[in-house]
Amino acid sequence: MRLKVTNSGKRAGQEIVQLYLRDESSSLVRPDKELKGFAKVALAPGETKTVEFTLTGRDFACYDGSGGAWVAETGWFEILAGSSSADIRLRARVYLESSQAIKRRFQRLIPFKYFLADERVKKTFQAELGELPMVALLLSGDLDQTLQKMLGNMPIIKLLDFTGGEITVEMLDRLLDRINRQD
Image (tube, rainbow, N blue to C red; front, side, top):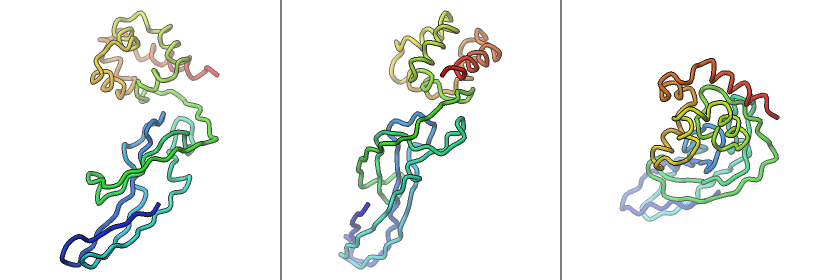
């Protein structure tokens, strides 16, 4: 990736250009933005320089702790450049086609949204715990968007707190075991 940096001031200066990558639809837990490179550029007043970054397949990959491997998922990625993660000045999108398949192993700390994203897992969840009012509400999708997002990012183990003891650790572990045995 190439980008131009211009010193629009009247004095010589330096700029640190930072390059970030954001997976727009990862099924893995990963940061919103990941720093992939940076370059320090010295510029005279009015001077423009080209900064070049190279992204490799490894830059798109994320460690899948449940699968024990680095994986790069198929999907859209946003490439972000700026002087900091809070000061993004340039954006581009790229689509990555990956041949890697992720075999997810569901665990207690996996966010609830990943259980809902897989229809087979969602059906198992429904069969095991769907009669509980809080679980039925979560599975229905009838929550306001802000609450749905908040609960979706919550680790599945937190359901024990939200259901007031209706779900026990043993019940959750049985569910996780059943989900993980599915092909």
